[in-house]
Structures are given as structure tokens and as C-alpha cells.
Image (cartoon, rainbow, N blue to C red):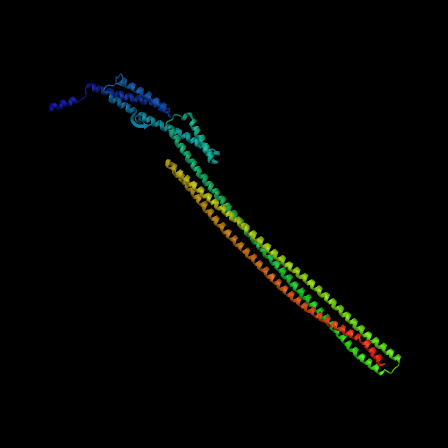
Length: 549
């Protein structure tokens, strides 16, 4: 059994050929891999290389390595190695480049792709890709710096997009970058950064537009507030001016009324006094006429007695007596006629003066009524102008308030568009997590700025509404003042009617005076009748005297 075990162990030992093949394979593998690394080291100094260049360098180095492997292993054909060298050849191939097959489908066709997973060629590819990426990133950073330094690109969104397009075109036209490993990936990343930059620029532009809109809204609110203040001051000044003017006109009316009353009273008193004096004079004259008439009768009686006593006298004496009697009667009649004529003339003059007084008083009353009517028209016209001057600015304020509301609606639409843009930026941030924090911060700042601008605008609108309410109150106060002026005018008109009633009363008193004058004229007529009756005494006395004679 022990012998079988030893024989079995000895039989398991490699043969001399196997030992030679192992040593030869290991030596050939080591020398070939060293040869590949030596050739590749020269290539590494010229990185970054294009995909074609690094592939060609790999193929050349691998060809030299496999040729050296055949030489060291005494192998005639690399594609037909001996079974003992197959493991060493496979090991060399994996050390240089480890490939794996990956089945896939393209255009509805099954395709098997070879994927590089390891080996020196994989390491060389990774180093070249890293150096290529660094060069590509340096180129993009250089072009991005030009965009950043370009003042034209800072104007608006269109200028920024144009500058970015020009930079991408320069990147595509750069011959030193063509064929570099990872060029398309770097280009796509750079384009995504441009999209993010445009999104951020759009956000900034929207934020600036919102800030500008807020500033315009603030300016509009300040203009509205200034217009309200100016309008309120103007209304206050107009109301004070109207109040002062109305007070002056009312004072002038009252003064005119007082002067009219005083003048009318003085005129009436003077006319009454003159009338009373003339009536007293007429009464005195009538009394004198009556006295004269009373004195004539005793004289006639005395003459009659004398005639009776002297009936026996001679004709000459009778003739003288008759002539004396006739002269006395004529004298008395002439005096009575002169007195009656003077009284008639005075009555006519008094009647003419009363008519003149009536005409003057009527003209003065008409002029005062015209003045009151003109004052009424002025007050109503002033009240209408005041109402128009109050209502028109209020309509302007209402229109400005509506424009401010429309501006707020536009801002809300802008905010909605900005929120939509924020959603797009969020999608971009999901694709590029590295810049998510920066974009999110800018969005947050823009939203905060918009919220603050909107709050300020709402506060300014509230202030404007409060100013409008104050202006409405001022307008109501002005309306009340106008109503008070109308009431004052109604009072003045009522006082004018009272004055007219007083004038009517004065007319009535003047009518009573006219009645008294008519009574005086009747008395004068009676006096004339008495005078006529006296004038008839002469023929009667003459007949009696003749009869007595």
C-alpha cells in the first residue's frame, strides 16, 4: 500500500517536459508583458490621445509582446500554441487586455459587444480618459471664462444664449480636442451647465423683472399717493376758498339787506313825516278856509243889519255900501279860491311825489331781487364746479387703482411662470445634483424677493385705498359744505321774501296814505262847493238890498 502511494505521488509529479514548458511559458509571459508595458510607457508620455491613436498604440505594443512570447516560448504560430502554453498565453492576453462579451439588441438585431474590463490596456485607457477629460474640462473652463467676461452676454437671455452657442461652436471646431476620449460626454455635461446657466439667468431675469415691476408698482403707488395728497390739498383749498367766498357773498347780501332796510325805513319815515306835515298844513288851511267862511257870514249879517238900518239913506250911500259889500265879498272869494287852488296844487304835488316814491321803491326791490337771483346762480354754479372737480379726480384715482390691480395680476402671472421655470430647474437639478444647492438657493432668493415685492406692493395698494377713502371723505365734506351753502342761500331767499312782505306792508301803508289824500281831496271839493255857495251870496244880497231899498 505504501509502495502504491509513493508510486501515485511520483506519477503526479510533472514531467521534465512539463517543467520545461512551465519555465518557458512563465519566462515568455513575463518578458512579453514587460515588452508591452515598455511600449505603452512611451505612449503614456504623449497623452491625451485620441481613441484611434491609443488603439493603434495598444495594437502595436500587443503585437510586439505576442511576438516576443512566441520567440521566448519557441512557438511558431501564436494562434496554434501547445496545450502546455495555452494557460500562459491566456494569462498574457488577460494581463494586457481583459475582454468580456455583452449581448445587446440594436435595430431589432442581436449584437455581441466586447467590453474592456481589465488589464494594462484598461489602465492605459482609464489614464488617457482622465487626461483627456482634464484637457476637455480645461477647454470648457477657458471658453466659459470668455463667456463670463463678455459684457454683451450679460445684457439679456438672448445674448447669453448666443455667447454660449459661439463657445460650443469653438469647442467643436478645436482640432486638438477631436477624437479625445470622453469628448461627447464632457460636451453634453457642458451643454447641461449652459442650460442650468440659462435657467439661472432666466430666474435672475424674472427676479429682476419682478423687482422692476415691484419698483414700478411702488413708483405708481407713490405717484397715486402724491396725486391723492395733492388732490386732497387742492380740495381743501377749494373748499376753504368756496366757504370764504360764500361767507363774503352772504355777508354782502346781509349788508345789502340791512342797508336796504335802513334806507327803506329812513325813506318811509321821511315820506311819512313829509306827508304828515303836508296833511297838517292842508288841515290848517282847511281850518282857515272854514274860519274865513265862518267870518263871512257874520259880516254878511252885519251888512244886512247895516242895510236895514241905513235903508233910509240916500242912493249915493246905498251905492257906496253896495260897492263896499261887493268888494268885501269879492275879496273873501278871491282869498278862498287862492287857498283852494294852493291846496289843490299841493295835493297834486304830493300825489306825484308818492308815484315817484312807488316807482323808485319798485326799481330798488327789482334790483335787489336780481342781485339775490345772481347770487343764487353763482352759488349753484360754484357748487356744481366743486362737485365736478371732486368727482373727476376720484375717477382718475379709481382708474389708477384698477391699473395697479392689473399690474398685480401680471406679477402673479410672472410668478406662475417663474414657478414653472422652477420646476424645470428642479428637473435640471435632478440631472446635475452637483449644482442643485446653488440653483435652489438662487430660486429661494428669487422667490423671497418676489414675495417681499408683492407684500410691499399690497401694502402700498392698501395705503392708496386708504388715501382714496380719505379723498372720498373730503369729497363728502365738500358736498356737505355745498349743501350748507344751498341752505344759506335758501335762508337768504326766505329773508328776501320777508323783506318783500315788509315792502308789501309799506305799500299798504302808502295805500292808506293815498286814501287819506283822497279824503283831503274830498274835503277840498267840499270847500270848493262852500266857496261856490258863498259866491252865490252876492246876487242874493243884491236882490235883498234892492228889495229893501
